[in-house]
Image (cartoon, rainbow, N blue to C red; front, side):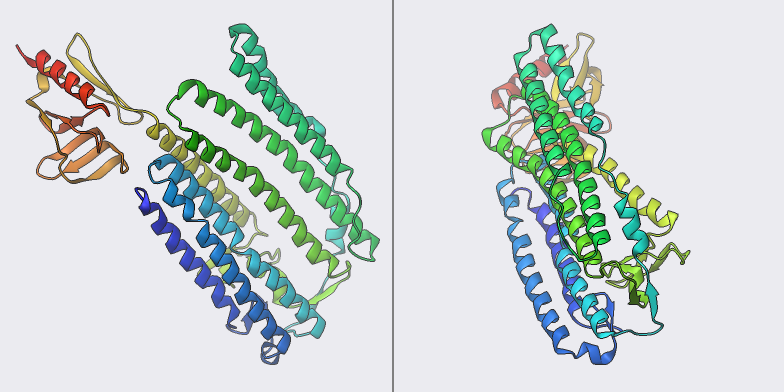
Length: 461
């Protein structure tokens, strides 16, 4: 596997997070599954059964996530696809790793309420305010679908001017998907009311909240699919080197985004059902556990601290009831996207863009490559040779995979170097300058030799 180093951080994260959650099956400071319990409750048979169920859940989950690493071994030759899969895998793992814990946490909290296993000061928490707010939840406006519709119509209109059939088909396909998602949106908006409780207010609150969450999802997916259709068009018209296998992998990756969004909304509604239906909207007795959502997320409006000690794991966590906690949480997510998305785009471009060397009449040699353009004058060349092997070295600022190396490197015995090479396609042109060496080749050996001869002839007085 050429990109095996992607598996190393994934395995480290896998082991660390699973160990973290498996440790939650053992009580610590009278806390089990994020729930504070008295000593006698920890020995209760029902809690023992929850511990066994918890371990079984994480055994199944851990096995499934381990199997999900298998695609890395089929993407070894494609750096960009390996990177994108790694990002998706990490995001999915970090999100889903808490789901078995959350499920058992709800069950442990329910047992605590039923048996009144409270520790410390006991108080009543009213949830009727939350129910009242949810009852007012409205579905989002259907006018949001105008955004993906316009994104689809624009390429159709442009296609009439340049007679681009592919662009027209792209727009039509995107518009059709927008219509399909609108139909789904309408169907969910009129879905049959479900009964969760004997309390009519609870039923109304959950059903209205569910309709709102689903109504937000479908226009978002429509916008995503419209943008994705145009990206696919650009790839089809500008990159001809994609293989069928790569296309299939790309389609699978893009499909994971909508599935992930659907999965997220489903679980958000499920959590709401469990938290409200179990209480029937009545005030419930609680201790400090009431401030810990899902046993791990701290939400306390009366506490002005932005950072508090974690209940699950080590270190500190955010108080999501504070403005600072929300800014840090959501700002960090936005920053991560700003870093990850350009990185993924650059990786794809690197995989499917080869360096291009040109020689101007003025004697300027230019090497064009994203982020690592370089040029020099032929008069600055001290020596030029054609070699069959690359010396060992390390990357200082650039990209390096099993297939290619491009950017700034330090080579053994040669020092600073600019590399623009396909690693397994000798020969290589070595161009010695005053302060560094430039190494270049084409994937086609004959083209490399022809370029070397041209450079050599231009150096001849």
